[in-house]
Length: 364
Image (tube, rainbow, N blue to C red; front, top):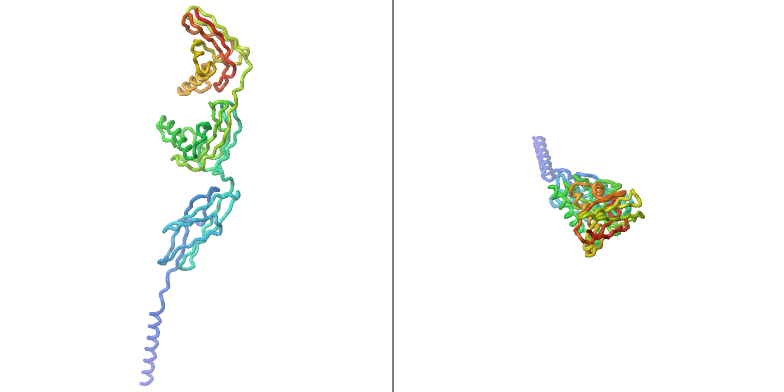
């Protein structure tokens, strides 16, 4: 009986000890982990703002994420409930570089890393190389640092754009494209794509014509999306168009009158020379503020403008307007009026390229 009592007491002590241990031992907590949507980020040479999505499994109340970069060109960290946001400085070193961002959890030893790789190269978004300049044309190449970025390239006079800020120049560019897009019933993006003016990658042999001789110009290149978002700084390259090369050819002009008709004859020294021939009242020439030379150039410019608006090419307009070889034209004249018959050589760009050869006469 005594042995049985001792056994029962011993069992009670064991049960009591076990019950105490169960009450004091905490339940094991689930492990906290940090998972990044991306383990590496590749940035351009220009840097900028970037973000990486993350999740924390089994978070601890009040715990926070801590971020440390081993290179200070990755900086300005912001943590939201779903993203890690940071800034990457422009790469001034010229070669590719890499940084590691360590993400740690304040409540335990959970960690993750983000590898940031930044491209090297030129900080300029575009390199512009002018290859040829004439009195009316410029030929150039554009090499973008970012081969995927879309961009536009235009020419504007220094007189027009020389005092503009970059923002003002971009707004002026949009206004220019808006006019042409509206005329076609398109958005600016549609217009640029349809007419091949939204470029991507290296641009070789780009050219603009109908420029004014002896004038300072800018080539303007800027990254632009189809939604008209500005994607880069504006890069400009200055150039000056040349003088118009003058021909040595001469044009012998004569005139005869018969009643109300004058016959103007031109005999060139070089039958390959293309020229413009006309007859105008001398009083109108004397009253002109720009003289006969300026008046004729303005007239040819007007013919070209209206011809191109009607769908003709520059070559077609000039072919219809100019003569070559010995030619005679007839003009109606008023009686007893002083006239100037003249001829002047015109080059392929529509610019006068000789002196004006005149013949003054009075109608019958």
